[in-house]
Length: 479
Image 1 (cartoon, rainbow, N blue to C red):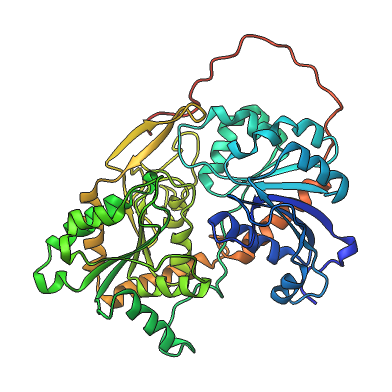
Image 2: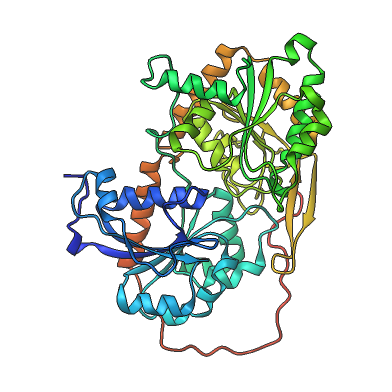
């Protein structure tokens, strides 16, 4: 019997609004881990979002497949495929038909404006739990009404927890706010040795990606081709690094990108590659289409370092996966990527953002985990849109990226291996809580605490309508 097992007829039912848990997005991957990892304690209903979902209108029972992965016999996992994350009408239908005990939702709050509009109606019956993340400061005061519409806020990054508290102010006392970092399954991502039972297939896959060429040092990028991820700067930085090497050495290094080479939300990376590298660019893209989790692990094992130069990044899941595979990481000091680098504050503790020092992107603290090479921003600019009027964009110059790659390259293979092992040891530790087991435990604890302590909202409230107050920054601009 699985530890903590609860019979199906005694479990609470959770309505989970997020990506379709069968998909391969970061949201779907983490949601799937949560559902599978807690299916012995909760019954799940997933309103599964996708763009132009081919199975809209169906009700799909995933219980049998879940049983295979969990070792239990009575999982209850139901999927309602949707275009987008749902509607008020759909949710009212779910309340009548599925009768959930709580609603858990996960992704950008702007996808859930319809949900926040009916939150008072819902919270008269069940609690709203938001597994949330925010990429950067200044603390988004424009999110205050969203956060206040929830009973529980689960912050994926330490920065997000601090942002939830800063934005809510005194209202935070009425919420359950907890740190629940992303967690990776250590049995899905791991180091590969010659003893690996599929080592010949792994070697063949590696040869197919590089066209039969052998490289001594491989830089890896695994993320979307969108502006805030800065893949073009990575390509430029990689080529600048290559120019610093003698010809014989330059021919033995490669950049591998797992992304869509052409994306309307980003750019044409083929053109960028050809511009900076010419015919002998040594820049490769993985084959198109989805790949399996096993193949994803192969890619991390092919790499010597995973680099993510994002200007905004709530978490950076490819870094956690890379660490679990014992591959070093390098990333911009921004958002949740700071958590994974484990900066140490002036008290010798793992740095936790606060009102006085909300982020380490200005380099207040320099000491960090040996598995990481931090890239402190060379510029911090304020960007935005009408719905998100302001957010820092932490920009790393391509020359800084080149120096970072060079720093990793100058380490011996043995040293990189040692540092990679330290990364896996830490990411599976009780301190980091970045394993799937810890993530599921944290979500389980939060669900139980929220449901057990839930106080239904009153049928109506009355508020005095006054002039709209000016909202001013609630932390220092420079720290």
